[in-house]
Image (cartoon, rainbow, N blue to C red):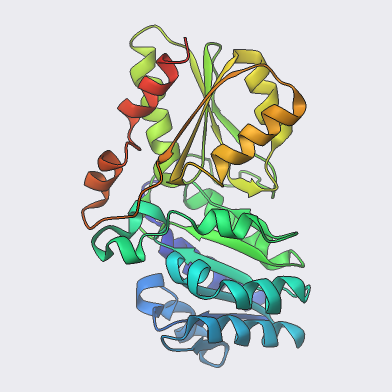
Length: 311
């Protein structure tokens, strides 16, 4: 496995590499190239990097216009603005128009940390999940991020990529294959299964499984990777196999991963004890990421407790 690496660095480096082979790849930022790391792309291809300024809705509209001319635009900003502020432009100009816009929402959930409640998106996935046909992915490590950016670039259609900018440890070997709509089993188990989305929550889910192992529990962990399409087949298989399932997300517990899994369970008739870890109908706050994760009960001990409560 690789060492810990900044996710934003992987994002920028991947775009630089892809941009060398495909001159249609362009990058748009809302005055956040330094925050996202895409100054690297601007240095390599200055004529293909656009700073739209603090005008996120306009940035998405520009990206849609460029898409009509055959460009492959990656437009990034904080996830709160990518979703709440630019939602109408992304919905209509990008998705309804059947274009090819890749929208990247950074610092999701408690990752917004000191930027506080106004910048802390606990609802972006709920909004995006309502858009017909939109692909929604959240990589869990540098390896999955690189692969999913590559796939987004080659995929004909809109994609919402939820991106933790901070460093994350590699959970996959270099060269691991990923695809939209396919989850990965990171840990086998027979007593319960934890389905987690994103780098923060996958890490906490694995820690929770270790805590439970010390108490005699044998718990599986699935990295969802793709919220839409969700890998329902794999999730339902493990729900039936273990009889106990807990979802984990750095987001409101309603409307995103927990809701998608609950719908799949209900519609399939799969019998399973079920619980959700996520923010429980609250706004964000100011704090460090670690403090906020504990504040909103997103940490390993809370996950472990939720598993044990499904007795």
